[in-house]
Length: 424
Image 1 (tube, helix red, strand yellow):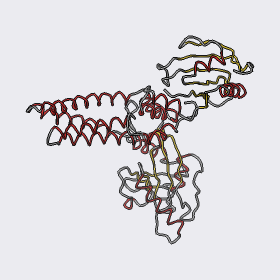
Image 2 (tube, one colour):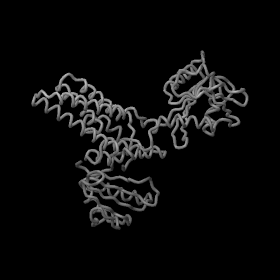
Image 3 (cartoon, one colour):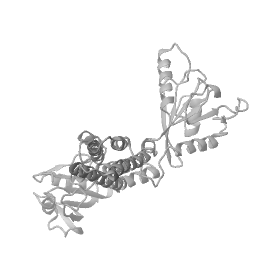
Image 4 (cartoon, one colour):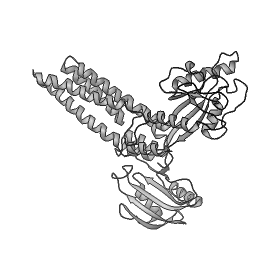
């Protein structure tokens, strides 16, 4: 348990109908009683007058809830005040808590960090909760909720149970030094089977395109209609459009939601040889963005399209440019012809990059540790003797411990918990 007691406003910024102020730590109940008088029984609510602990001025009449650790959100004693959400009321209650010796304001994410440190959640659940707070689409919400509710944690626990059974068999074989050919065959086979399951998970779509948006890059030569197409797809003037070649000298990113699919639409500089230093930098950035694109919209000659696994060739300016080449989508940013069809094609390619709504998806950190475990299991499956197998299995267990935050990931804690708002 942490020695100090913390408090913060856990609801949105005032003014609001109701504000929730949370106190957590060993002194939470004493602090709550000094402001609200006798606290209600555990996990019960009661209306109390809130008074300043020193001058006893009336601050508000509020609903007070008491929770006893360790069976709480943070694993500590908690008191919550559900008071009126006016600025003066909230400021008054926070000032009253600050006047109590031993209490201090919470840092961003500190309540969740205490939940992690006290074993109430693991690191994957904390990451899911952070994603949930940042979710802007329904798909993002569902994916984040699956993590926050422990979906990945349960799967990891099942993997760890299998891994411990394999480790126990390996250690037993070492201790007794038995010539057991059945065991010699079963251990590598078990390691290979678990490795195959991890590899299957690593092959699934990742969470980043769902969180950050599928990057759709619009590219082609100057004056191909790239900026006009971006403006038409977005429905507003976001990129400057002129008849002068090389108008776009840097990329422009525009977030866009397409039937619940988050996209990051990127306009780029026209690709050409140029002596203009600034434009040359823009062209270089455009080439890098093409390489990093999830979906590429190519507005140049079809045969000049860069090699990319998800390319949509677009015949822009279809209202004045004649018939579209075979395999190119005819689009006019002026008349709107073909825009709906193009959006449908973008959505189909983008959706294939996103995890299914009922699936648990991995982020980069989680995938990296699962890959470590898979590599260790591969080493165990190929090991020449049981001693090496046991060592490889220990490495796999260490990777799972880093995945859940039980060991060796102190450097990522601040990055994860800093994503939380104050009071969470």
